[in-house]
Each structure stands twice: as structure tokens, then as C-alpha cells.
Image (cartoon, rainbow, N blue to C red):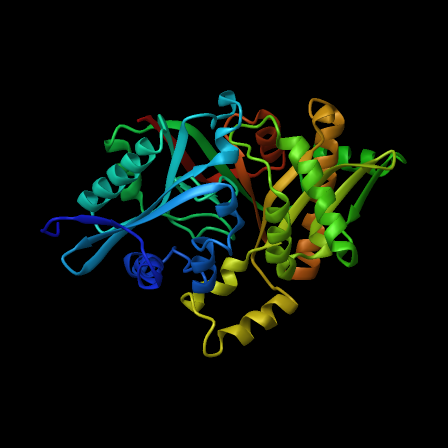
Length: 385
């Protein structure tokens, strides 16, 4: 272990912000399963005025140094929308967060986490829920299993040693999040096929692609269903109007009409399923940089993605239908339509669904019914301050 006192200082100015981003690339360079994010995206995430999370959150970034060397980083944050939620949903008054942890060794991690906890305590927080990098909608949780393969787009990947460091500091599991993978080249089990075929014969049900020419209204519709479907879920924090516009702009280049389905029942949109081609497959070899020629490669890829994996990051069914058989039927119908399009149009062979809360019985049952299995687990920890 490296020797010398660890000094923790708040990030101040452009050079510190650059160092905050850079340390992740150095510490993870030897991990073959880490996907270097594009630097412009990594910088945008931590920049007020660019990431709308800062509009409703207090954020402090910290750097760890030994002498003149940067040896770690962490963010501490209080999401004012999250602390306004009911405590039964996991957040609530007095709950702060930290995330974006990178540490050269355990001594650095201990110092960084202690400093984040102190900052939260000074701001009046009585509990910490972590890691969240930085919103629950971005990269929640510490990877707990599935270290042997890269994450898909918008999922995190941290060394196992971080998990050990966190638990050693008295953190307890608050929630486990699962992702499921499946071989999409295989037909679904006969029972699921019969459920899908029954739905296709039902004149009241319509499964349609999104219409990209009406991008803003379709995005608003999906988020309206999402906010209704997820509003009682653990960890739910509503999207702001600014975040909706920001997400729409960010996703637009990888949105494909035939990979996002809206289910209508008696003419009313009641469910949706969003699927994204795994952008990580394209950017992993780029090392975080679009220059000198990676920007051209990325533009070509975005024009017609050919991928191994498709990820389903979000789906939702309006709350009033969630306990009904119709809900699972609509889900199976959307999954089947997307499965066929993924194979035919994009050459995909693998799907990943999630994340899904470990105790979301309905979604876990759907994932298991189509012969998928858990491939990664992430843990969100909590601790009283």
C-alpha cells in the first residue's frame, strides 16, 4: 500500500475538474471490462449548467492527494427532489448521497468517504444512501457480481475492492438491483408465445413503434407513463421538465423507432418499453476520446448500429393496470416485437433487461418467464450519519 498522508480537498476550478475526470481513466486502465466514457460526457456530468441535476441538488466534488499526486475522488450530493419524497420509498428527509468513487487503495477510499459523510452531516443530513453517480437515474449502486464482462450503456462498473471498502465502513445493504441477460436468438417458451399470439388477436390491443418525427410529444408521453408507473417504486425521483428535455436531446442519436414500443389499450397509451443498442460496444475501443478519427467512426455507427447487445433500461405500465394479467401480456408483446426487430435490423444476439429492484416481483417474474437470468447485481448501501 502506498505510504503518505491522504489530503482531501474540494474541487475548485477547471484544473481540479479535469483531474477529477482523469483519475478514473488511470485507475481503471488495467480492467479489461471497464468502458472508458467519452470525456466530454464525463465532464458534462459534473458541470453545473450542463447537467440539469445541479438545478435541484447541492453537489460538492472532492479530490484525494498524496503529496502532489491525485489518488482518488468522490462526489457528495443532496438531491432536494429526493429528500422531498416519502421515506418509505428509500429517500426522504435527511438522506444525502455520495458517488463517483475512485480510489487508489483502501486508505484513500476511507478518507474520501469520511469527507463526503462529514460534508453531508454539516448540511444537516442524518443518513447516507450510496453510491449514486449522481442521480438514481444515472448509474446507481456498487457492482456486486458480474465483474467478468463489460456493462451495457448507462450501467456502472466498479472494482470489487470498492465493495469491500464500503462494507468495512459499516454500510448495510439498502437495495439490490439486478440486470438480466438473455439469448434473443431463441424463441420464447411456448406459454409466452401463446400469450403474445392471444394479444395479437385482441382488437383492443395495439403495439406500435414510436414516431421519431413527433419526438418531443412521444418523449413526453413516455415520461408521463413512466412517472405514473414508477411513482410508488423504491428510489423514485420525478424528472423535471429540464431533465426531460436534456434526456431527449441526449438519447435522440441512439433512439430507433423500431426499438421503442408503446402499447395502447382501447386507443389509450398505457405502457412503453425503451430499448437501446449498446453504445458501449462502439465507444469501448475509443479510450474516452473522439479525436482524431473516433468521431467519424461513431457517426458511422450511429447511422446504422450493428451490435451484439440490446439493453432495455426502462419500461412501465400505468399503475392502475399493474396487478392485471393485461400488464404482463403487454410486456411480453413489446419484448417479442423488439426481439424480432433487434435480430433482423441490427444483428443483435443478446438482450439485457434492467436494472430491476430485487423485490419488484412483477418485473422479475417477466424476466424469468422469458428464460433470462441475472448477469449483474448492484448494491445501494445505507448508513446512519
